[in-house]
Amino acid sequence: MADTFLKAETCSKADTRSKTETWRVVIIGGGFAGLEAAKALAQAPVAVTLLDRQNHHCFQPLLYQVATAALTPADIAWPIRGVLSGQRNVRVLMANVEGIDTGRRVVLTGSGAFPYDQLIVATGATHAYFGHDDWAPHAPGLKRIEDATEIRRRILLAFEHAELEEDAARRAALTTFVVVGGGPTGVEMAGAIADMARDALPRDFRTVDPAQTRVLLVEAGPRLLAAFPESVSTYARRALERRGVEVVTGTAVTAIGPGAVTIGEQSIGAGAVVWAAGVAASAAADWLGAERDRAGRVKVGPDLTVPGLPEIVVVGDTAAVADASGKPVPGIAPAAKQMGRYAGTLVAARAAGRPAPGPFRYRHHGDLATIGRKEAVVRLRRLTLTGFSGWAFWGVAHVYFLIGLRNRIAVAFSWIWDYATFGRRSRLITQPADARPAEAEPAGSSGQPSAAAPAREAGISPQGERVWG
Picture 1: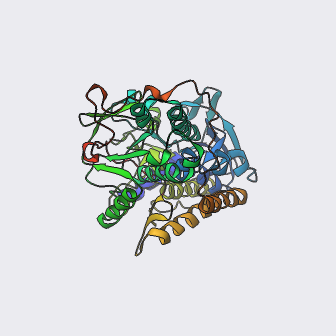
Picture 2 (picture 1 turned 120 degrees about the vertical axis):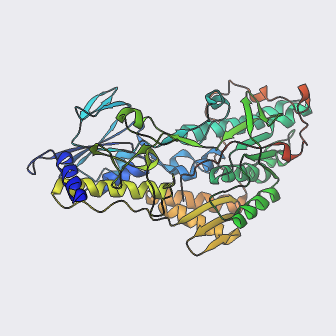
Picture 3 (picture 1 turned 90 degrees about the horizontal axis):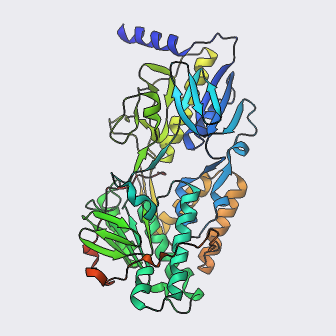
């Protein structure tokens, strides 16, 4: 009886407009969850306004390939307007959301206020530096196209400056790269840097030998890929080490500064540092005045609505929701897409006066991570693939989920070309080269370890979250 009353009360609060009026639905965010929500509303009697601070949707699982010159930004990004151009009930606006007035049901932006009858919040996540935000300028993470091109710039500039450097110790520091975080993103990034240095760059330089590049992958936990079975983690570690990557577990990064990383008590000079050690939710919980979990995600009900605010649905990395086993739904793209699709279906049912769908149920289809050329790990429900078969499956899956035939063809062609030629076609430094990463301290100076310091002296911060399953 109590459940029936609660459901009726929730519906009455959420459904404020008459059936003859067109509902105003605002979606904040054009990522995986936001786009799926908009698509699910295609046939609904609603007027949708999608707000995003950028004009494009980015396929985040392949950002690391932009960062390592395997793909271009245009290969993995699409204008949001283009994605939704055939959906006449959607208006896309580029605006920066500054807050939400839940009392007046208005989304506040720097470009004006947008009233809503139903609100879908899909604002995603940002990098988490665990109380060390001063590390951010020296160790960018991978969430946006701008992050990927900045990392690419730093890596390529490090090699350019190493080519100019006459001091051998400083040259060794410039060609040392540190990836912080042993989740899928960190594993993929470390393997890609090693492959690029070993296969694509040696013929381009005369003074520096990119094949002698030092790549460190540091993880504070006991093993890489903690979400995978231990046997898969062991395989991934060995595959990386075969590529020359120094894998270090069980020690934390304690400082990151210009050109150097302190791992435990040892400082290592580095040409570039990449952060893949964790994420935090957006400011949505502050906007809504809602209860949040430790990562800042909004605690939502079984139907992904905010308790006390049934007209607001929170999805993707912004939402804290449990799966059928009681475990938190992971912050990965398939989960975000499923939540977005559910949110759109829920709002469409409300607008049409139909019964709402049952509670959200997340279906986990598996985990994927590529280690490098001809090496990947894939864990499906009843199947685990490694090596070339895993790599082929990983490639087909990612091409399939790209948006648009042009992008699928472009990415597939790039991979085939790179596989045949060992090349990286996007080795362009397009941003100003004003900051010389020769700040990288030579190993062995000021009490620092030599470039040959054992990998066991390194380590990291907590495992990074993954944007693709």
